[in-house]
Structure formats: structure tokens, C-alpha cells
Amino acid sequence: GDQVEQSPSALSLHEGTGSALRCNFTTTMRAVQWFQQNSRGSLINLFYLASGTKENGRLKSTFNSKESYSTLHIRDAQLEDSGTYFCAAEEDYGNEKITFGAGTKLTIKP
Amino acid sequence: EAAVTQSPRNKVAVTGGKVTLSCNQTNNHNNMYWYRQDTGHGLRLIHYSYGAGSTEKGDIPDGYKASRPSQENFSLILELATPSQTSVYFCASGDARQGNTEVFFGKGTRLTVV
Image (cartoon, each protein chain N blue to C red):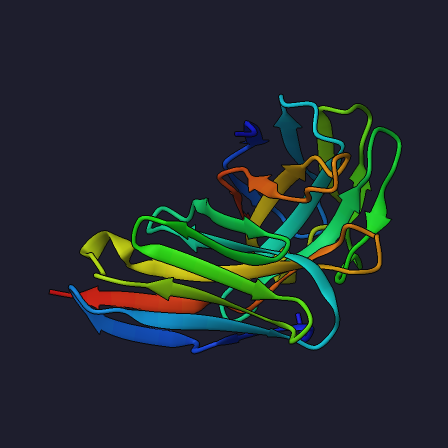
């Protein structure tokens, strides 16, 4: 939705390199999730954050609710990291409504 | 991790017909959600629910109804299907009772309206 602006829309990386994906929020969000959608279309949970930073293997995510953004860092990219990455955020209104960004299509090249 | 099962996984429907998409979750989550995914739009929220008997409109509810007869089941109903409703539909569940609103998705239902 318009409340969640995700960038870039597409990204190409060579194996072994890294980069960052970003989501900016136009309203206050209380939590963010990051998903990877694989080639079969399944949505895989990567991170859930209400604040701060989490790391899992080659992935690291940060959520700054005051400055209204979240990032997903990928390092040492592998071919299996290819897919579309989505952030999704919950509005800070207590309605538990979760809005998605438009996604980043990530292609990892040998 | 939540187990969210959608049925059918694929469906072809005729214009004007009634379509029901079903979703079942087995982890006693209170919240359930229906999204559709179209190229260039990401996932857009159609309806969601806080628990049995509750349905709430999402961002694009027109042309859709929802039903939550029990904690486990949440259905999306297209009373008069149209070709513009051709899409991939995802159901999700989450347990917000402890303040953690993490959601888990089913594998999706591909609907084609001809």
C-alpha cells in the first residue's frame, strides 16, 4: 500500500556480494516483518521486529519506528537468495492491520 | 510455526459464478487475513478477522465477503466472480494476544475467472 514504500523494485547481485533493501513508512508503524517469496510462490518468514536489529546467518534487519524505516541487509549472496522480498508493517493504531510493500525482485548471478 | 492450509490450491471459475476459498489454521491464532497478489501490486489486504464471528474490511474489500465461523476457519467468498478477480489469493494467521503480530502464510490459491 501507499503507507509502505519499498526500494529498490529490482536488484541484481553477483554471488558473494551484498546489498540492502529498504522500506520507508508514511505513517507510524509498531512492527515490521520481512518475507522472501520463492520460485514456487511460497512466503517464507525472515524477520519480525518491533524495534532494533536482528540477525540470522547472512541476513540482518533493522527497524527504526521513530524514523519510519526498516532495512534488510544481505551479505555473501547465494543463488538460492533469488526471489522477491517483501516488507509488511502493522499500523500503530491497534487495528492489527498489516500492509505490504510492493516488493524487491532480487536476482543473484553466478 | 503456524500451519495454514488453503483449499483449493487452484480453481477455474466462470464469470458470474460463486467461488469460496477456504483457509484453515491449526495453531489457535486469533487473527486471520486474506490477501490477493497481482503483478506490480504486491499483496493487498481484502478482509481480516480478530476471531470467530468477526470480519473486518481491508483495503480492497469490494466484490468479496468473508466468513469466520470458528477460530480455525476463515473463508473468502466471491458471490459473482469477475475476470478482474483472477489472482493468487493468500491466507495468513497470527496471534496478537501477546502483542506479537507476526503472521504466517498458506501456500496460496490460484484463481482464474473465465
